[in-house]
Amino acid sequence: MSGNHNIKFTLENLSEAAKKFIDTIGDDRIFLFEGEMGSGKTTFITEVCKQLGATDHLGSPTFSLVNEYNDAEGNPVYHFDLYRIESPREALEMGAEEYFDSGEFCFVEWPDRLENIVPENARIVTIKVNEDGSRVLGF
View 1: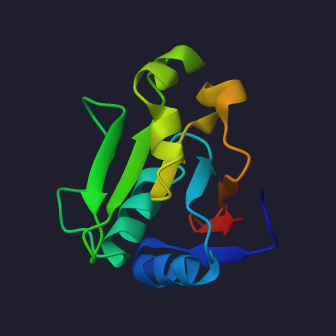
View 2: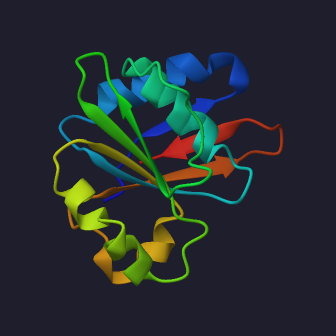
């Protein structure tokens, strides 16, 4: 679950913050991003995917609940946006458990929609917005 790491970032140092996040996460692969609407979850996840070597069109899943990218070695990286699901059953029907069991990176926005199907090995990542507009990533 959530650890003792904090990374402060702005748009100007987003790349460095994403690199630091990757360097700090060890072998963990499932990350549940929590933060208010507009806090920068999609922006941060997109930059992490870029730093992992993804070159596909990056951004929040718009028409699907999950986007799949490939990292520099060709391994899949999954980005979930569960904002639009109405029950954990929808996540199960889309195969969320199979994604989580894949051993690949899974970055999940709006994980509260998963309720009781949150994997035990998932790490919670919080993004808080400071008054000056900077963000603090906690994990």
